[in-house]
Length: 84
Image 1 (tube, one colour):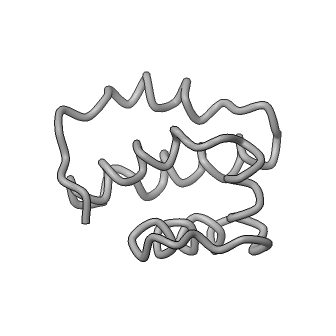
Image 2 (cartoon, one colour):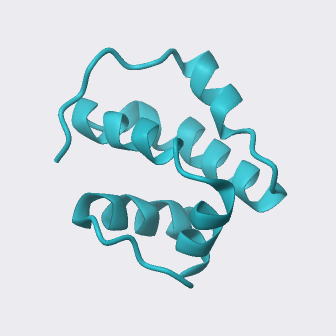
């Protein structure tokens, strides 16, 4: 699992969850509001890392068209996808 550094504020993360695709906006924003506060700090850092990926790749992951090779990312993507 990746180590966490100083995590961005929830306001900054809300802004980063606003994507170019409505489906991603809903999935990421819902997860941020509903699940992110309850995650361990390492999992929060992983979510922050996830937001750095391109929209199309994130959508492919969430739709199950492509599977992340990283086990930690794959688990997080599956959790987000289940909530969508």
